[in-house]
Image (cartoon, rainbow, N blue to C red; front, side):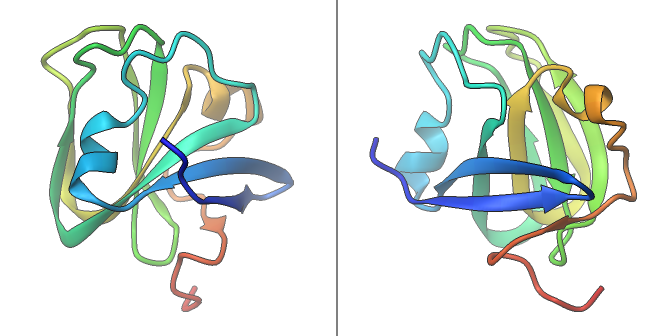
Length: 125
């Protein structure tokens, strides 16, 4: 899929993300991708702010996932294993979900409570 891209930044750490907005784009996500460049990811923009559940059906990459508040604040981070059908839940209502290579957050010291900035988030921090 040819998705729009935006740059997000957490502290001194920029990342280029593909933005999945439609049901079809979100359903496809990173399925079947065998590699993801180090500083790239996918941002899922959900239609409604609600508890989001993500799984790894047909996704061979180990990923880390962050559930983000409207202003880009990270509410929860989890690791996802390839092809895992159990997945992870945001636990709280969110509209934004960011997937990156597994370990990306840990390697940069990014934790829950940190905030991403970028053109898709409300600027009320």
